[in-house]
Image 1 (cartoon, rainbow, N blue to C red):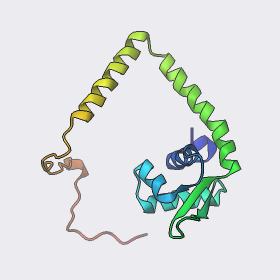
Image 2: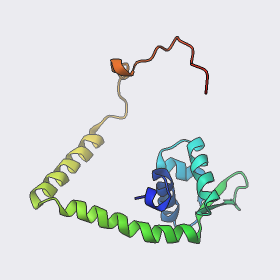
Image 3: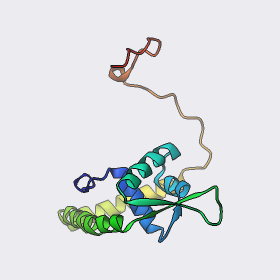
Length: 146
């Protein structure tokens, strides 16, 4: 759906986070809420700013921080797109019968409880197992760029 409106998934999420803040928000807070690096956030915001969907502002309380806010153009895009997202979600959930919906809710509740029960301190994880077909020879030089 985001692509139909010329947005990446990350761009849509950024707009939703920024709009949901109710006003200008520090760029670092947007990236933290999206769980993405500051470098990726900069790329997303550069694209949104180039498309006039966000604007960056100096933080009047701390000149070292940059705030970001949506523009009226972004609000118009969200006003068109979010009802479509709701419509698709409603149609998808409507395809499930009551038993399936109850099973989904039970599964989500069990997952929430399992996540809450994970201890803060865990032992070191096992080494990553890379499937054979995805292994690369890490000692060989990279081919020249084309």
